[in-house]
Length: 391
Image 1 (cartoon, one colour):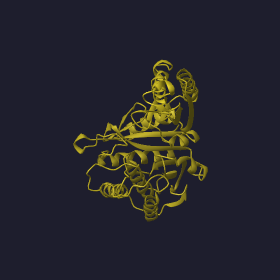
Image 2 (cartoon, one colour):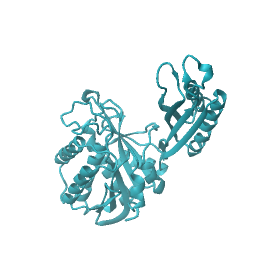
Image 3 (cartoon, one colour):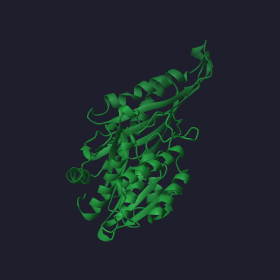
Image 4 (cartoon, one colour):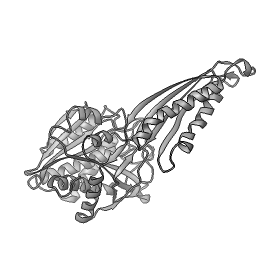
């Protein structure tokens, strides 16, 4: 395949991104998106296979010897009703690409076009991972379990994630932890119901639940090193029947987040201790359930430093060092298996209205950032494969 002009490459990637944006699909439902990816890879002559139901893994084999590198993009959307007013807005009620996964997939397909067109001079092998269900329940683990990092044996992996904190045209590369763990907890407070006029005959679950909400904030405020980072958030609370009835049950749910695995492992015990203490003080019973989610994403230090240097020396891409985010990402599982690098791609452009954070119904990107993303992915794959930099 001949090398494609940049203008037609950009036009095709924008076309693909908008096609995916119009037809958003939730985790493990990405049949249309996976089929689109497969058609594109077929047209490029890139071999591929299905994994994890809707995941696709392609392989670009360079004609020169080198290392094996992987590039990963997620494909799923969110259960959000779009309110952007874009001419290519979601055509599916209640579903939207509100986190940029449509752009991630389109950019990886663009990188595939470049790499396939340069296979005669490409060193090593590039595994293209189109992953389902990043937003939940998680598609990375099933793809790993089905051998996506083993056939062939991947030596390093990278991903792009769009980021409204960065101006379009920039990328962010940070060594060490860049995303927090994301665990869920569910808390049920049980008292004794009664008439609102006779509180002394009941055990009110509402004030007990309110006291727990306030007391749990002390974990971050008073029990954690101020230079460390954790989050304890109560996201939902529900209880009661009407204004003059004392509630016998209140149910809450929330999230626990941390960068440090040791802090993460201690959060459940801390929450349990506080909940039990408040429950005893208020005379209620409390039931706590914690579900472990994604672990922290930790960028390989050497890979991050070396690739940032490589970009600055070999390309015109502007590289910044970003602050970590408390958001979760199941790329963490890939980065636990092989040296990994999450790269942030700036998409902010106030004139284009690209100012809203991910998971917002108004989220949009500056599409002029797409070529920068493709260039970055290609640079990682070709540079690592040829030994231009390493971890």
